[in-house]
Image (cartoon, rainbow, N blue to C red; front, side, top):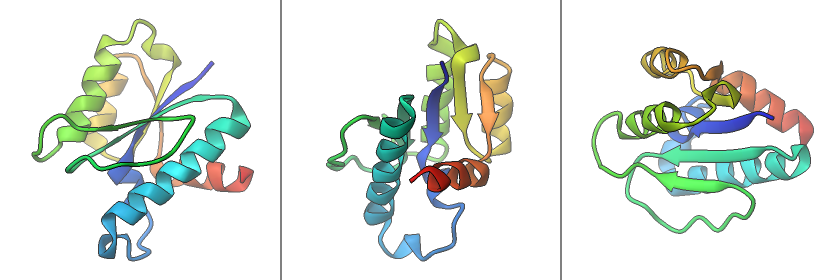
Length: 125
């Protein structure tokens, strides 16, 4: 069974819909979409965001914030999670960040582009 590991800000940023005007709102909206998809598909879903942690009231998915505040902090967290996973071949990382793609693919994870993933989850809901 596929376990999804989502590069949250990469996915949020893949749609130029003014998300930068309400960053937390965009993050919450993505979390809701991910939770809906996880519930409907029965898949395990984790999203990792950059930035200061805040309450994201969503059930059914694991919402995490990078443990440090710096450039590529969420990418580093995602790469670490894949590296430490006992079965990375069952992990699909959602990102369009080429450097992160190379890092997680070298540890055995699958890749789905942010745009393709959004199209998939939005076609289900």
